Image (cartoon, rainbow, N blue to C red; front, side):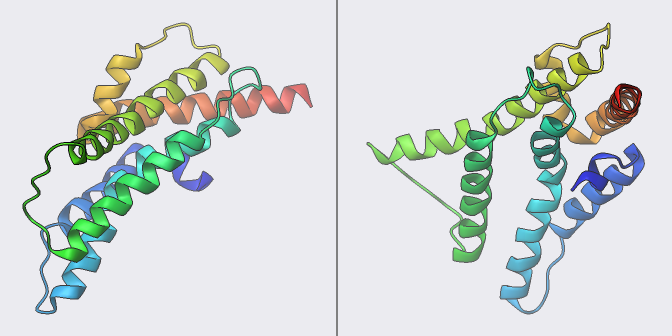
Length: 171
């Protein structure tokens, strides 16, 4: 996954767009269509998943955070989405205590992007960047990825190059 983290912004954008286009592809076999839609959901969210998982490899030990909760939420959100696609459920109505489960899935989806924004801030701090972006702006750039990729990915590439240069100098 490290290679994906180092891609240029236009390459990441192209992969994300492929995922988006696949959402609108339909085949005569409904099962194949459901599989393609599930793969497209994973492709669309692959960038944020990679950011959340790979930043710990580049930050200092003092900045490292556990990503167990992040992984749990990724599995739950992707699992729920794939379940909804495969089961063909289009309309969900939940009441009472079951509504809490729905609220948790909304929280889990948002937490994935919040964790990604915080991970990017940790990465920026490790590289010694002077201008630190707010986690809120990073959150919205990650959430609205067609714009965010063009802004964030070049910065990630510069930071990774700087961190790798610092590590080589220390060795």
